[in-house]
Image (cartoon, rainbow, N blue to C red; front, side):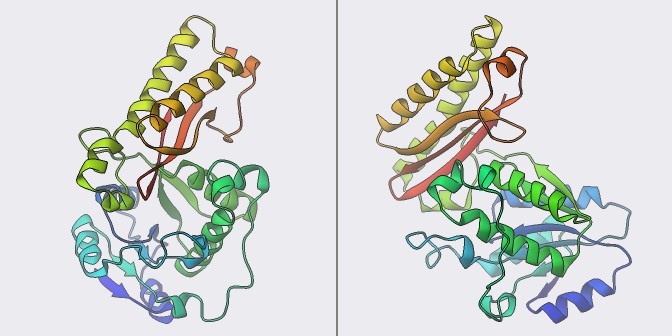
Length: 291
């Protein structure tokens, strides 16, 4: 695997390959979930001559003023070893000065109806930062396919819609969420948890599974409505917060656009997703389940 730190070096390396790459952008501090995305990209391009490219860049633009940009773990040497073992061909790891040689005055601002709900409501400007850096990386890497984890469900949807509206010739693929044996979704921020917090953290997935089971039962009895969903959401949040969590949201939304389903849609079996974000101690965790 080649490790490249400059835009010029990246372009020179990719020019030597006969086909456009598969791309997995990350912020580093990698875990098995990231490596599964690399392996998925490897399978997609198998036999095509396309390289698998990963990027590691901690993007200041998507961090709020009170978030963990300065303390976010930078583990480049370890990450590079893991990427090489997973089948990555090229690692692009630019400095901030390399990727943003000037203040980034031009930004990609996603539509408010998707970007200002859920995560966007609690992290203003987050998806503008995500879209801006991802669009810039797409311009540099010029991939034919890019793989993003489904754990960041709203992010995947925002990026997918950006690619469609901008007319970018990139196939966006979602990678399934990897979980620890107890059900906790793998996340770089899990490393912030103390031993006691790590044992408690599984409750986020527990309450989501409970919501999923309640939705299934209500569907089976033709009793699934907006009102019953609101009750499930409130009960799930109360259950978490009673254990010492500080919950931003637990909501059931349509898979296709993350908006609430109407009663008519619910009666017709609209595909749903439960999305959640809650803080345990100083660590904010997110998770989701489709149903």
